[in-house]
Length: 512
Image 1 (cartoon, one colour):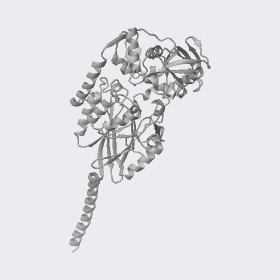
Image 2 (cartoon, helix red, strand yellow; image 1 turned 45 degrees about the vertical axis):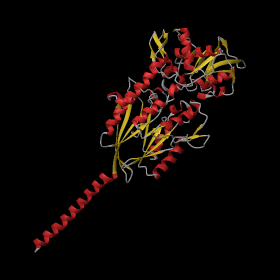
Image 3 (cartoon, one colour; image 1 turned 180 degrees about the vertical axis):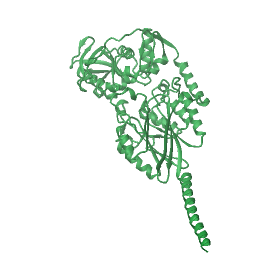
Image 4 (tube, helix red, strand yellow; image 1 turned 30 degrees about the horizontal axis):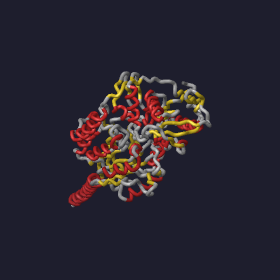
């Protein structure tokens, strides 16, 4: 009898254990199969050059996307913008070709970055209606409507089969000054991100990704407070800038090299929104073949450029460097040539050109045969020439602005013709200019001078607000001719460009 009772007790005890094990296993598989969702986020940005042979571009990106989408994991493709300009082609079509190619690649979202304003607000709005994908900017307001720029989303909820991803995109307020934007306002970044994150969570977002236009200190705080879950950015010039710290947080990711695409595998418990798995890798575009369809698009555009701009117009007899650290931080041959062309074109006392308008980032070897395409690549913005009348004290204020952010290689750095300037970057901002000669004579604060410069600078762009109310003068040549065409004509006329560095700009701090 005791044996029978023991047998039933054994069955009861073991059945209970088995039942518990079965319940645990079922719970595990339920959470794994139902609550957990796996996605792959693919992030690329800052690709204004559609045929970058050295680093790879859109044709290679298309292949990468197709290969990843062919796998089982759900893919979200995010494009960080910074690509509508400037480039040789965008100087003609104002970024239409970038939208055309991205339409083929089908991003889930594209963020608005600084370069999307290369051709100002109305053109950006037009590009948004040509796009088959949503564009996002979360902290800009059009002053004429008190809402976002027409066609741009405040935020975005990407709804996939098992997961909802929220997208927020924020701009640095300096875009207004750097691009001469008068119609938009920039809202505080932290305030905007918190507002849109709350809205996206209420709409059911399981995971929120921030696409910032700069390396912001506030980004890490937003991650630490779990307002956002991930930040993705690309800045290929980050290493050139001083006084910047890069976060070590693996969820605060910055791409600093051209031709690199970020891929992140994420697994999320969609019931609790807790992260189960996170793994990021970088892919090199040159490791992928060119996609035929996108390559055909790129080839069609480049063939048009070649037919328009292949003509040779002159020769650089000296090595000419237009890399960022040169044109935004020191006297350069190319900057001198442009300033000379401006001065001559408007018959001015002085010619002025900001380094940020020079975008070719190229080293031309000695005796390089200059093509129309070279010049259009270097000067892709659609700037015309304005002749203004200023006092010497305005010139001093402008020069202080020019050298105020030289450590950070900002585009406001001036190149000039008819002037020689000594400055000391170790001094406080606003006290750096030490000596100014205008056509070999000492600058006089109360004297009136004429300056030929770009319409962009004359209208206060890059912080040149001291020029805003300057009297605009007439001059004999066309006032609507683009700066790139003016320089092309100048080179055709001279044929041989043999300029050397002349000491127009000298930095005289100790340590030099």
